[in-house]
Amino acid sequence: MKRDYLGNKLLKKVAKTARKEAVKNANTACWVYNHQDKLPEKVKDLRKF
Image 1 (cartoon, rainbow, N blue to C red):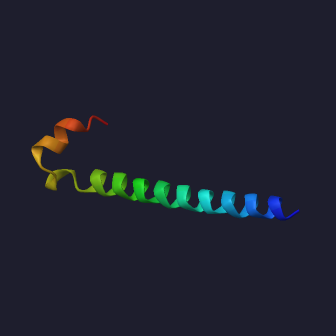
Image 2 (tube, rainbow, N blue to C red):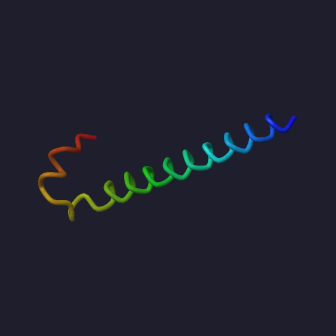
């Protein structure tokens, strides 16, 4: 029983971290998309949406 509890706690933590990362990446992508005119040329070349 105790082992299951620890496993669940760990899984929740991992899921939370993964979600945070995903949100951060999504926010970055949105920012890049909305500020394309302000980006340096090098970054514009790297991105090919």
